[in-house]
Length: 281
Ligand code: PDD
Image (cartoon, rainbow, N blue to C red):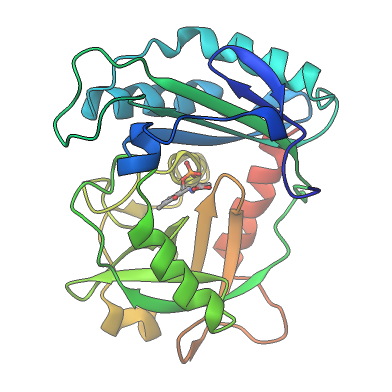
């Protein structure tokens, strides 16, 4: 049970996780019909809470799941206390599905959304020490990757290919362009210019991605919102991943292209890692 959280919040109640049960007719279970957020609670605060809730509300709107998320922040505090985690760094996962209804593709009129959350202790090192080896995998997901939804089979399958090859992350490629990672965003650096895929339907606009862009702006590092071609990876100076749990992670190798050996980190990547580390204090 160690990998599971002790407590689960389910529709207003905080339960021992083994007692948290949902209906097999929940549309989250049947269709993956739901949205989610993953946040970290570090040094007693939910990092970038406002941005996560803004994205959650946008996801609810885009999927037409009618749910008022405004009470959830308070409920997260209650969950942290009841889980005995208010003084620890942890991951907070929350998901909202369209709720229970007889199986039919079109939306039910009056289902009540199912809300599930949990908090789990997590070690978040000041700077992510990984020097990630990643591989490219075809991006075979649908065309609304901007929605943080629970239907993640495209991401799951891509990530599993990477995992089975001992790689840290699958870097997704659509029409020759690098979009994002299976559970992270990717950035490249060339001649001190930082490149990231534009925030459109092909990527999830990560909160950490936005923070990385803001950090670049503050550091006077130019950011270009342009996708890098798979064929141009070898021309790049640096590459890094961003994500709530990934933080800012240096990439040492993509497929056969080696950026760094000997656990080096690129100059810009390192600068951003250091500034990001300060934000957690
Ligand atoms: N994943 N792109 C995808 C496809 C993601 O799943 C994630 C996050 C990101 C980075 O977003 P953010 O910086 O807001 O975490 C980008 C989370 C952590 C997950 O699914 O567990």
